[in-house]
Length: 220
Ligand SMILES: [Zn+2]
Image (cartoon, rainbow, N blue to C red):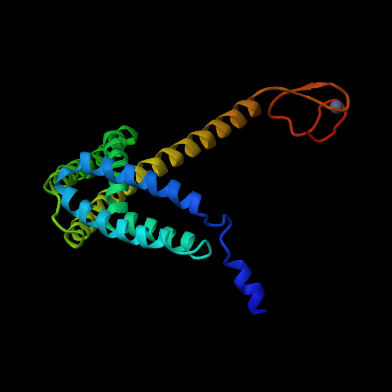
């Protein structure tokens, strides 16, 4: 039983020295790019990179059986915590910005439009604040983690606000559409009731008000 359970946790792709080296090079490039994008975090990124470099150098000296696992650990050491957050922050910012832009477009009435505008304004002020925080950066990995956790929280809060007003407007649109359909169907039924009808048994044309065929007495 223990063997079966262990099997479940074997990762789908086995770690290799080659694969981890590839990841390492890619990750180093990402960190380099982050230093260029967020120079305020360069010192913290340098500190993180140095630590991970040491871990990677030690891992490479291990035998073939242990090296891949420890190289993978060095890789995650490089990218975990504030580095990962910093790596993802740009796409979050972009998503929030486009959401703030489109929030008011779906509003059907004045109150929705106002709620959307307010949430969009809030989002924009969060975005300004986030930009400032990212520009200021942080000297150490620990300080960077604090800043980026706050940034993530602020972005998440603004996104939830926007999500909510967008959903309210969407639900209203859906309800209005449904209502229109029901109205249409009722009108069509009413219209049909006004038309004369043909008996399906004898083809006699009966007036709209007749419940039975005037010719053969069959029910409508
Ligand atoms: Zn008939």
